[in-house]
Image (cartoon, rainbow, N blue to C red):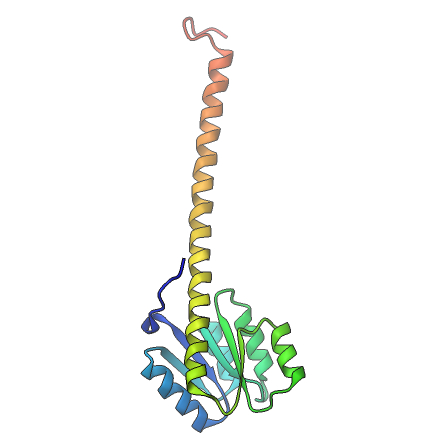
Length: 171
């Protein structure tokens, strides 16, 4: 099942302490139709993540006092949020750390905006699929409970039929 991604329904949080990059990324994402929130503070990102539901989080790694890795952990705590790391200090260690932390993708700075668009679109699709899976799981669980209740009722009726004579009503 390939859900179509409607950017206007996708909420993206961008966290970077570089104001000019923040503004540029915000303009591009809005141009592509996404609903964008931006912050230059890891602390503010933490507050936004606690209060809002985001499909995708783009996070710079080097911030303080709340680091990008802390933002990644907070975002990853939500099963349906995908995290994309952006950094100007890419290294093998940071790439492996991102992989270890289950990051969707790792984008080096300076950003290539065609790559950014493709990555956000793919992360959005993955987020939508996770949300749809969660919805279907909830629906299936509810149906399973209903079926279990039906089975209990039929068992009770069968028990009654096996111990009581239908004609006389005697046990």
